Length: 333
Image (cartoon, rainbow, N blue to C red; front, side, top):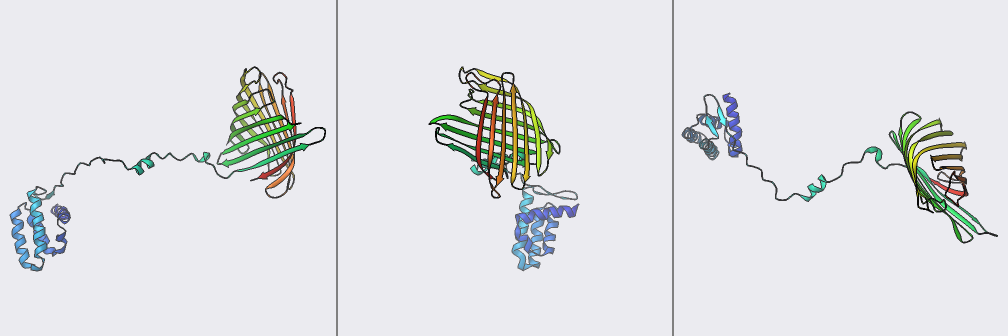
């Protein structure tokens, strides 16, 4: 216990009087033993004797002795039966800073990281421009831009689609429609997935102001390989569709179903057939797209497509079917 007490006392004094490190070990041991008595006078007597024996270290010896005497007087070194007690000075109360560092604030307010599955990363997809122009007895021009992008991450797949079509005949606009959709797939098995889908479609000549749909469902690949794939998906949802003429609102529970087929007939020659239907109690909508594409380069391709839209119960004055034939130029990424 005495050795442990001396070690503690030594650490304390070294912190108070760095000069102690320069004196002989024998002199420091004598002073430590005197300090263990708790008598400052005893420390002074030993210091005087040690200074005579080691005159070249007299300054360091007296500095160390003064530090010990001060510690004894202040009660930080005290005598006990078998220990030297080191009493640490009371720790000063920490004061709150007057101002907060603005840089610290900015770090604290920094938003957390987004979930990995939501991060944007490498996307695959295609952008297609199409157009048809005719002249003679009638002047017709139509064009469109379609964009599709897919990104897979872990069990999730992001699917984004958007389109814009515009046409004129004999100087008058006869077609204008656009829309977008987002679908998030979650892999449930090797070929099965669940999904959430949202879509917005606006067609100036359909009789509906717009159609808004949201729903959930399940999909499954019946075939899936490099040369041929076919998947079916469907599920319940809800459709909201204001009608242009009388401004009534057609909003009903809905059922969505879709089929997508891709067939690589030969290298660089692709056939696509996409079909989707939305059923409600008031009306149902069927959209079919058939396309044949031939590759020009690794990223460019050209082809033909045929789009067929059918409404079972369109607003008054509108026909059920609408067809569009296009010549396309596609950029893949």
